[in-house]
Image 1: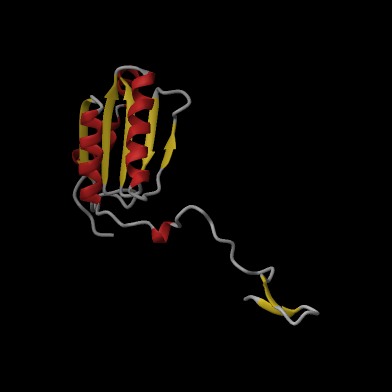
Image 2: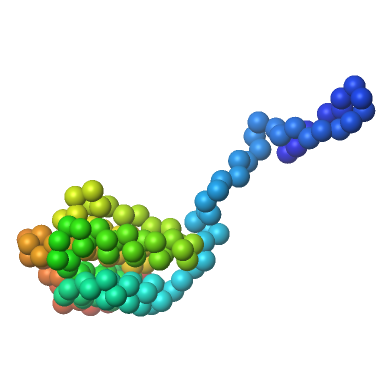
Length: 148
């Protein structure tokens, strides 16, 4: 809370107390607009399609895992292509006021974009074949829908 003090000339001034919250320039998670998982998925797929992603697949994981509602897996032609796709996607999401985390931009073999309800994996072809995430996250591999 502000503390008021008077100066010798009878003018008041407001002094911030040491426990006063500091205003941050970035939005907090709670003040960011909430997009539905379906809307996020649509936006991600459209952006990746615009950026010429190859072998684009998505899986609906609602009721199968508490980690995410959708997973998107796509391939890029090169490390440069992967990082470019990830940067375009992150810019579009940040322009909407959404927060996200990106891993792997520095190497460009496997870039992960975590938007919360939607997680995007961008691979170079050889790396995608090596890890075979489709085998892990496909609805067939996860089994029937469960309630959490």
